[in-house]
Amino acid sequence: MLHIDWLPNKKDTLPLYRQIYAYIKHEIRSGNWPINSKLPAQRSLAAIFKVNRSTVQTAIDELMADGLLESKPGSGIWIANNTWSLFSSPEQIDWNFYVESSTYRPNLPLIQEINRAEFKQNIIRLGTGELAPDLLPHKELTAILQKTSGNIKSFGYEQPQGLLFLREQLCIHLRKNGINVSPRSILIVSGALQALQLICLGLLPKDSKILLENPSYLLSLPLFQSMQVDFAEVPLDSEGINLRTLAYQQKLKKAALLYTIPTFHNPTSILMSEQRRHDLLQLCRENQLPILEDDVYRDLWLDSPAPPPLKSMDQDGLVLYIGSLSKAVSPGLRIGWVVGPEPVIEKLADMKMQNDYGSSCLSQYAAAEWLASGFHENHLRRIRAALCIKRQTCLDVLTQHFQEIASWHIPAGGFYIWLKLKEPISLPKLFKMALAENILLNPGSIYDPLSNRHLRLSYSYASSIELRNALERLAAMIKELN
Image (cartoon, rainbow, N blue to C red; front, side, top):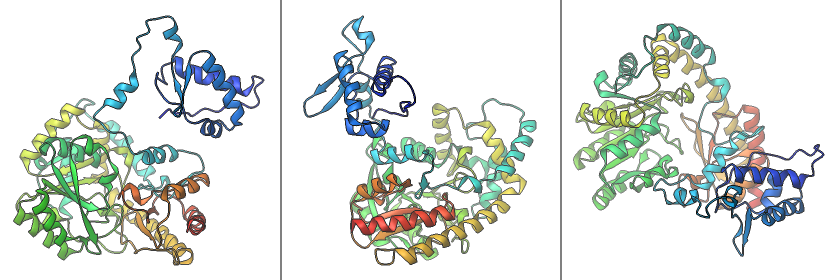
């Protein structure tokens, strides 16, 4: 898809169609828009440029006359040439062939649109899974970075497994949740997503099957299909992953791994009960099924601390454990970790060195100082209090405006409310209606392709005023579509 972030200047003396002509010609000549790329429809271009469709048509007619564009019947307008090709060999590199032939799949179009829209001015991000800017610990991190700048002995590469000081601090941090490991059993990664990539690429045979909850965050990421990994989905109930179905799936699918988010699940916020955790671990032990536990939301409990992680009950090296500072502290630090048996950690560390030669040493020092300073617990108390207020704002509006059209459960932590509509509607249409009113949604179809009745609402990013305003308008849109 061609990226357009330009508008013609309506105060300029140059006619609008000539400005559009010059812009498109520049993008083609510079190579930003390769040969054989398709232009958006004229109606869409007119909306993007905020001009009449006839203005766009005039600019396109001139570009076609110059031989830069061509019309393909029933298929739209395509880039046919660039000015270099008028003076050189007719054989041109078709970069679109390379793009489309890659084994690495692009994001879903809906997710690409969400990623772009998140940075629009005045947008209310009603689905974003991160802390609001005013909840990030700016003052504390600034102090830590100032202190760290004088303490760093080297700005070179760190050990393959990551900064030893950080791994030592993580051992102390993990011990609070019952996970007792040495620094040798920890790998520092650039966020939890890199951990998932390394594990799938480095530990799983080709064409492996991963069992996972449905819905699931992983279903929104085509990169795993790019790595020739297949998914077998297991439903959830109020206590977590359904063990009866899991046992059947394991025998049926011969899976290589179970991926689970037992604590404040993404996107449903379901908290797996302690008994279910014991039963799950026992079932996987009996079937020799490794578990990948994604625990990035653990610190974000709002009512009471969550049950112990699966890893704390693991006596057989069955569980690989992923944690991160992205959700509770700062996504910009890009610091996460994997805990597992030493041979596994050594393999993943070797792979990470091949990929990026280690996470940023500056971020690692800052993260280590953050954990060592005592800032973490004070910060968590502050954001829990703020998230409780925002959660209550959401629940109040839902009770007032959504009872006739949807159902939900009260999350005990994390960021999300998994809203289930009582009647199926067109989620793409709702998404576009909301976006037109500067409300950005995360439809449930991102996390379950068959869903046409769910929305992942997040109370973590928008302000309480924005949440109330956006949810009230969203209720009116849903009622209009019913």
